[in-house]
Length: 317
Length: 306
Image 1 (cartoon, rainbow over the protein chains, first blue to last red):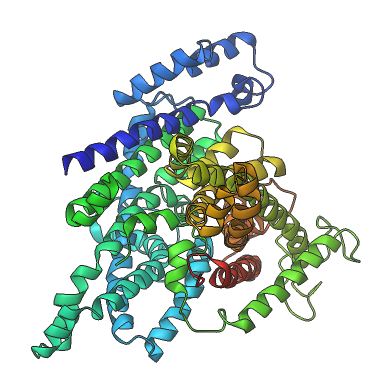
Image 2: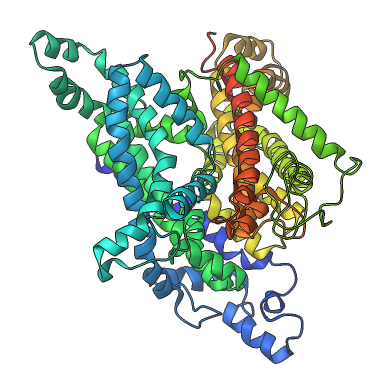
């Protein structure tokens, strides 16, 4: 067990080094002197020197990299060129919005996808099964901003029951907050539901052919009990893995949705920083999201290994 | 029960962008009935793509106004009497003409970036899958690092530091697609390299390079090409998203995503300004996806009965 976890974490080190190096040299990709890109062509040499020092461009790359990694290990992602605030604190202040959005989107997706997956697996080939899968095939091809704008149009303009833009933090009233988070969360969920549903359906169909399901049926257990108590649990492994991975993806994937509904999350912070040419913040967000993404993935991996010993053996072999 | 490693290995490289799903997800969707999946779907998809590709190629010579010309009052809805059928945008420019010119951007980025990514990815993946050992270990670390990074963030970071122009987008998307092609090519190469005809070639004393070229490549390339159609669909969605965010090709050049973004402020009064380009994007993405999925069902070595 520990060997399995250790192996996973060891494998992480070169990956993280490469990722951080890629993020670090981002600024070096700017054509010409980045200071001019930030200040404009009218900048005086002394202004350029100040920005160079802020970006650390007056030091060699290796020193800069070590300094930067050292800073990140201490939770210091640098200081914004635009607001002069510490980047880490800005990210943390925006995190609740993105986190709430991602979690709620995920919960909605699971709440809808699990019953649908069970139902379509049990009634495989029926009208419900075929029609829900046709809708799913269409939904997975729809770009996020299309479903988002469609929802905004239907519920924000046509029926006008939910606000289309803006945000009320959770601590200023749960009800108000829910009104603002609902449409964006449903947009995120709509992209996940077909994927979750199909995965659960496929695994569930396989489980329903197992001998223990036949045994349960022979004992005369009601269908509901067989489906929910006996068949659902062993069919959920892949779904749980995937929903974990999807949560990691969502942390970086709410950019579009935050932009459509103008929510003050990490995604819109990233977009703002790009438009402000605030490269330190862009770097910080990129690194923060990459770290979170890698971390969630490793937790999912380990969690899966803990739940299912076969995976452990396969990976260490 | 699906193996999570396989689940992960096949997951959509551009996930988080809301594009079509690939890999195991596509396999999970495989059986679904309906219009989009059969022969009819493939024919419709091909037809749509032929039409938009022709329009995109012919855009400079078609007897239409320029995409920046004002052809009528602003925000005329689509209809038979509207200028050029699809009406005008918020400045009075022809929506149809702008859509046609936007097609050029979407198709150029989608097709060129995926083509380049496929070539490089094939080379990397086949090398890793054929030689195994240390070569594979090193390449796998690079592939894993590239895939450990949320794609949209990588994309935004690249566009943040480089100038917003066509070549930047093509480079960014090429970089983004290489790892997924490499992973697919590696997986397929691993499977092929154990087959008898490869063993026979080795026994004859054929060189590694020749085996890769004569025995492996012909077997790996077909599933890769059908996969590439699905990736084109993902790239087009991602490119549309970038344009939507204002980080793709800057105005006045028309792009589908840009048209959707500029139409958004008139969503309450003129929803067609958003939904006409959105539907065009959706149809195009669906078409590429349908063709890729069709190809996969017939060509994927993991699916075909060997």
